[in-house]
Length: 394
Image 1: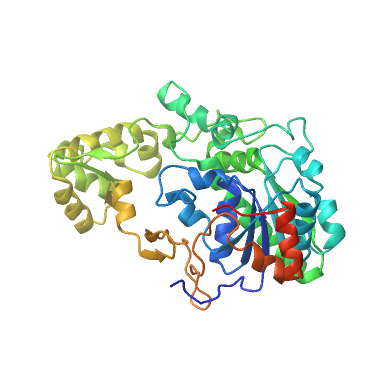
Image 2 (image 1 turned 60 degrees about the horizontal axis):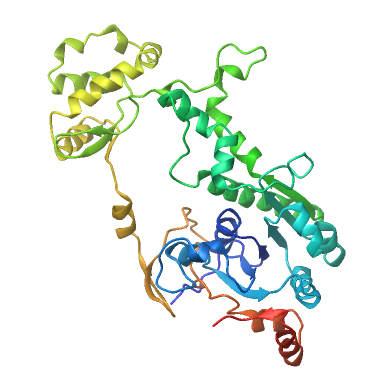
């Protein structure tokens, strides 16, 4: 059974008008922290429900974690009564999160102004690809596009000679995390002043800030003192190393670390190499030194080198596979699909621990109960369903 414990956001209500991964990941985190999240979805189901295989037609492996700690209602927001039901839910929300672009949001009549008219203290977070006050505000954007627009493809070009995107939806996830800290900051402001507000998380700005934290580098001063790009991160030899029987990643940092490895690998002549003398010389020669480390690690097994590195206080780890990581996750029992692996929330509180209180719902599973809580009568709920504004899917 889900844990009954409440997290630090136990009294916070969130209305989730998001889709795919960026927004649902943000509201999943808020839910893990204890917030009461109601997600609004159309009858066709969100994309994340069908991202790869899963144990149920409406629950992919992705959705089982992404939709946890949420109740779900399926509304036709183009139907006047569906829009009204959504606004009724927004009246009770502390936070509304949406990744609808300004055009669709305006056509639906669910802008910040529309919601604020019903709930003046609401925190309304609008997250989309581009800033709404710029020329691209209504342009569609997905993770791949944002990666290429914010320098991630360029760092591959600088290192490998060919632009590429990361094999993970990093722009969606960085933007999702940005949504979380942004709405929590706005919530703190409201607690102090009573003032709600609209806030915006353009993916392109969130990812640009993420990428330039180190890759802005020497180009940040004005005039620049060098080109953009963090040299160490762009070194071809920086990365996991092959051993005699697999892969590991050792990262010697101090002169002692390097000397210990080189001597153990038979390169005793490097013990007094001037490239190891100080932090600056090691940084300037890092690509060459990493290449030598890779040569050394190829001479023994992963287990042997991990033991050596532990004994000599050298940072090192076996390269973990995705399958290894999944197998290590705890199991939970979903009431419909049975056992599944729970991805930990990534933060630990002593007094207010995060928890999985609700398993991922089916489309529209909680529609009746959330409308009754919002003040609808049972007869009104029936009428809403008969009108097609409240939807359900087998």
